[in-house]
Length: 77
Image (cartoon, rainbow, N blue to C red; front, side, top):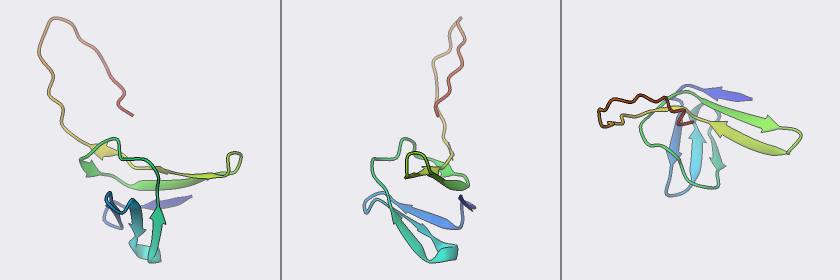
């Protein structure tokens, strides 16, 4: 597991890579980012069973909903 503060890594969506500053290491990723916003600490985890690396990066973003009589909760994650 590799944990980095949000000021210790940079994500380049065009090149599809994550640069870890403390290790001078660039990691490629597949897919696209789900959310844009202020990013939190990254957790890069190796799954031994699936033999895959996963990056978990929380992001803060604003979402405005219409006001109504009903309420709901959503897990965007």
